[in-house]
Length: 205
Image (tube, rainbow, N blue to C red; front, top):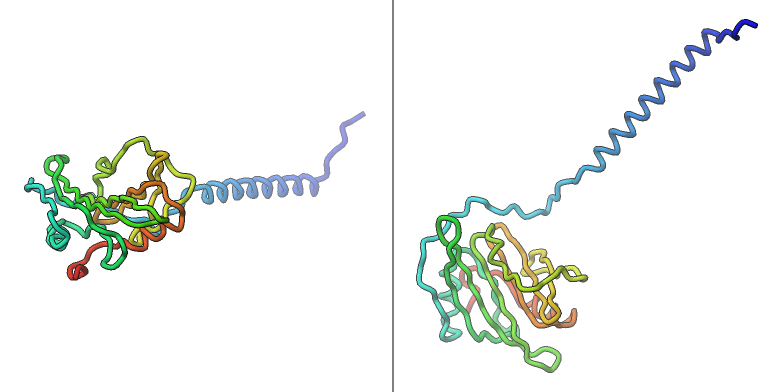
C-alpha cells in the first residue's frame, strides 16, 4: 500500500506552527535572560576611588569636651558624633593616621557613655578617611546579624554581631562610619542612632 500523502495546506500549517513555536521559545529565553540580570540600585552610594591620601600628621587626643570642635574641624571629611543634648557623654576622642597605599588614611574615634535601660553603657564612634579604606573597619569575630542594620546618620548600615557587641558600619561617598555598642534592645539601639549625625561646621555650640 502506498504511503498516505500529506496535503499541501497541512504542510504549510505545520511549518507556520513550527516557526511560531520557535519564535515563542526565543522570546521566552530573551525575557528570562533580561529579567535575570541584576538591576542597578539607583540609591547605591558611589564611593570615590580618587580621594587624595594624606601626609602624616601628629595624632590628636581630646583632653576635654571643649576641644571636640577642633577635632571635628580638623578631620578631612565630616565625622560621626553625638549631637548636643542627646544624653550621650563624651569621654575620650582622638584622630590618628595609618599607612595606606602610598600615603596615609586618617581615623577618628569618639567614645561616649550613655544611661540605657537603667545601666551605663560605653559606645564608640569611628570615622575613616578615605571612603575606600574598608580594611580599617574593625574585624574581630563579628558576623552578619539576623536583624537589618538601622539608619546611621541617614546612611544605610550593615549590622554585625559577636555575641557581646553590635557594630553598625556604613560607607558613604566621603568616608566610612562605624558605631560599636554592647548588645542592646532594638529601642535602646534606636535611641543611640537617633543621637548621631555627621558634623558640619557650626554644629557644635
